[in-house]
Amino acid sequence: MASTTQLCSYWFKSHAEKYGRPRTYPKITRDIPDRYDVAVIGAGWFGLNTALKLHEQGKKIIVIEASKVGQGTANNSTAKISSQHQIKYTNLIKKHGKDLAFNFGTMNEEAILDIENTIKKYNIPCDWKRAAHIVFAEESGKEFDEIKAEAMNANLSGLKASFQQSIHDDAPSTIQHYGAMRVDDQAFMNTYSYLVGIADALHNGKVEIYEDSRIGDISFGAPHKLTTVDGHKIEAQKVVVATHLPIIDRSGHFSLVEPSRSYCIAVTLTDESKMIKEMYINENSSKTISLRPTADGKVLILCGGGHSTGEIPKGDPSTWGYGAVESWARKHFPVKEVIAKWSAMDYYPADKIPYIGLAHHGSDSLYVATGFGKWGFTQGMAAAQIVTDLILGNPNKYARYFDARRWDLTHTAMTAAMIQAHVTKHFVGDRISHIMSSNDIEDLVPGEGAICKDGIVGTVAAFRDEQGVIHKFDPKCTHLGCHVNWNPQNKNFECPCHGSVFTGTGEVLHGPTTLPLKKK
Ligand SMILES: Cc1cc2nc3c(=O)[nH]c(=O)nc-3n(C[C@H](O)[C@H](O)[C@H](O)COP(=O)(O)OP(=O)(O)OC[C@H]3O[C@@H](n4cnc5c(N)ncnc54)[C@H](O)[C@@H]3O)c2cc1C
Image 1 (tube, rainbow, N blue to C red):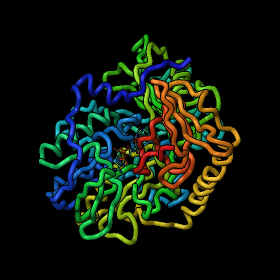
Image 2: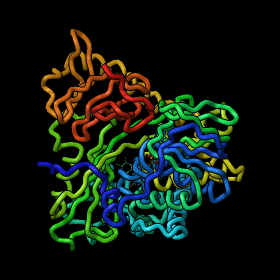
Image 3: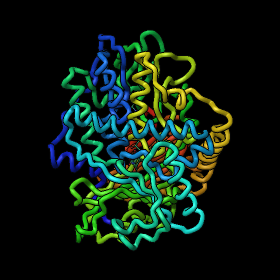
């Protein structure tokens, strides 16, 4: 039986316990007459790191966040800072060649140093700790061969990688495995504390930061005009769209990436001597389990149980999401208590490398970074450097490999077509299946939602709140019209096409949409 802990990331919770509530920033409540060199939309990992780099170079910046500083995906992750990304370098060499793989490797390694130096420079308390990252094979055949090849290819790509027969000098002997690949000198930390520290550094440098101010529209020009969903205007010469998936559909990135959700838990152990010291991940990308300790060695963090966002598994809740992760934890560790649970999604790029730089061919002043495939901290820091260099007109040796405007038929077409097929399947299929098998609104218990019958052939996204009041919405996502689905483990509506997420009462929790569900 899975525990019933309230959803809140361990990073946010432990930050609040150690350092108290973070600083809050005002909401935009009027047009802002000042004109900025750069507006950064989104105070997440990529956005805040970019803002700090640009501020250090003397640019006049404004940072505008839809929700709260640092509480996006970075706050809901495993918070490993690693250039080792499961099986990565073998695929990169196969798809793009040794030169790109090497540049990807060195770019990620440099990003780890960049993060470490930023922490030192601004004296950010965020439990930074160097550790090895280890990926292990759970099967003796194909997985074993892949691990061996990956160790060699990661080495060729500039990582300190080695093959090792066993992980049992540190990890529990119940984890059955057939060899592992180890990369030393990686790191882990509290990524939320880090972002609070970056926002503090910006605030102390008199950079304006706004929270609870969702940008709904970007009107292109010189300057660009940004409009919040409440109708307030901001002007900037250049704009960094750091909204995880860009909110500008014109760049087309929504059609080149696939959203995938995972679930995380933090547990204490009855015997702390059983705590791991390094970071681990299994090789099986369809049943990933990723784990790491906290810096004080008292808490174990585990993430997995994933699925394509919005494609909610039908089975027993203990076989997916939090339940699956907790079962795995209890099988291998003496779990005392689950002290936190949280979840997030990230976007997988069609050709396995992120999209970084100018958003599209029609603009020379609009920048994006997306498609980090659940390894966004090193790639996102590198993206912050690339975008900063592009804005300043400085050379950056990595920029050309990850150009966000690429449409590379050889490496992208097949996967992009599969992503589109997935979207079409949901756009059409979910409408039919919702009509055929939707629920009765009367059956909803408080706190639950579902796609329900509405009249003879209609459907609604319905939610019964804790007071028993029913809220009804058009099930069409306000981004591009796919039907949303109810996620019973996170208690929200998710869109299977591009990953927009809404509360039971219809408010936007995650883009690319900027508009709430339409009331019915
Ligand atoms: C479960 C999970 C575990 C992960 N673990 C790791 C890990 O261990 N190591 C690793 O390297 N990576 C990991 N990742 C990936 C990493 O967390 C992400 O790649 C990274 O956080 C993405 O950064 P971002 O800045 O693009 O997005 P975010 O950090 O989500 O920031 C985007 C910000 O933009 C804001 N925003 C959105 N729309 C608007 C709007 N219209 N107006 C204004 N603001 C807006 C959001 O509110 C948010 O604050 C993990 C991902 C997941 C899902």
